[in-house]
Amino acid sequence: MELADVTTISVLGAGNMGHGIAEVSALAGYDVTLRDINEELVQKGYEQIEWSLDKLVEKDQLSDEEADAARERITPVVDMEDAVAEADVIIEAVPEVMDIKRDVYSEVDEYAPDHAIFATNTSSLSITELSEATDRPERFCGMHFFNPPVRMQLVEVIAGDHTSEETLAVVEELAESMDKTPVRVHKDSPGFIVNRVLIPLLNEAAWLVEEGTATIGEVDATTKFDMGLPMGAFELADQVGIDVSYHVLDYMHETLGDAYRPCPLLAEKVETEQVGKKAGEGFYKYDNGGVDIQP
Ligand code: 3HC
Image (cartoon, rainbow, N blue to C red; front, side):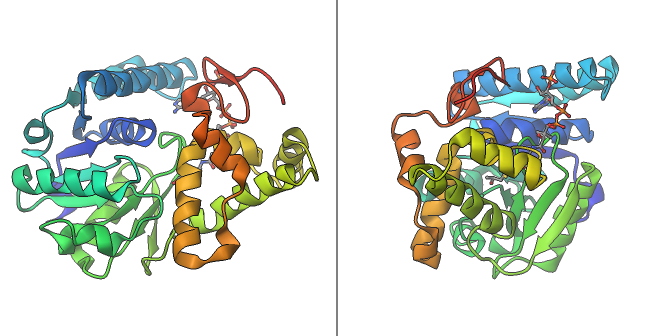
C-alpha cells in the first residue's frame, strides 16, 4: 500500500487524544470515522473538535470554510463495523489498558479490510506485544501524537519486531501529509523517546513537592521560565492527564526498574480523580480550559 491509497482513517477512542487525532486527520483532507463505545462519549469528542476548530478560526489559523470542510469529513460512530469497514488506516487511541486494547483489536480484526494499516497511539506499551494481539502484526506500528495533537508538531513512529518497512514508510508519509514531523523510534522500548524523558521529569517535580523542597508554583516557575519549557511541569501533567502520566510511569517502573517509582502525589490525584484539565481539576483548577487558580 502507498499513501496515495489512503482516503479514509478510522480513529478508535474519542477521548483527549482520539478527538484531536480525528481533527488533524480531517484537516489534512481524509474522511474520518470517530468511534467510541457509546453515543455520549463520541458526541463529547465531536464537541471538543468543534470547540477546537472554532478556536483556530477565532485565532485566524483556519478559515470558516476549512473548518466546515473538516467538520463534514468526520462521522461519529459507535458501531465497530461502521467505524472500520472502509478504513485504509486505523488509529487506536483507547485507554492504556492491555485488556481493553485486546478487546478492541479482536473486533477490528473481524471488520477491517485486509489491506488496512493498524497504528496505535499508545504512550508506552510494547508495540510488539500489541501487534501480536492483531491479525496483522506486519501492518501494525506505533503512531504517537502529542497533546494537543492539533498544536503539537511531533509524531513518533514506532517499529515493533514484526512491523514491515512498507508500513513504517506509509505511516511516516501519513504524518507528513498531516503537516507533522515524524521521528522514527527503532527500538520498541517503554515510553519510546519523549515519554522516557518527559514522564520522569514530571515524576521528579512531584517528588520535590512531596518532600517539601518547593511548592507547585515554585517548581512550575523554574521549569517554565528558567528551563524554557512551554508549560510548567505541573501544568503539563494537567495537560496530558495525571492518569496518563501515572500509567506510563507505572509501566516504566514495572519494566525498567526503581528509578521510575511513581511519586505518591500522582497516585493520590488519580485516586481522587483530579486528573487534570479534562477533569476540570488536577494540580490546578480549570474553567473553560483556562487556569483560574494558582496553588
Ligand atoms: N485546539 C485549538 N486551540 C487550543 C487547543 C486545541 N486543542 N488547546 C489549546 N488551545 C488554545 C487555548 O485555549 C488558548 O486560547 P486562548 O488564548 O483564547 O485562551 C491558546 O490555544 C493558547 O495558544 P497560544 O499559542 O497562545 O499559547 P502557547 O504558545 O502557550 O501554546 C501550547 C499552547 C501549544 C499547548 C503550548 O503551551 C505547548 O506546547 N505546551 C506543551 C504541550 C506538550 O508538551 N505536549 C506534549 C505532552 S506529552 C504527550 O502528550 C505524550 C503523552 O503520551 C503523555
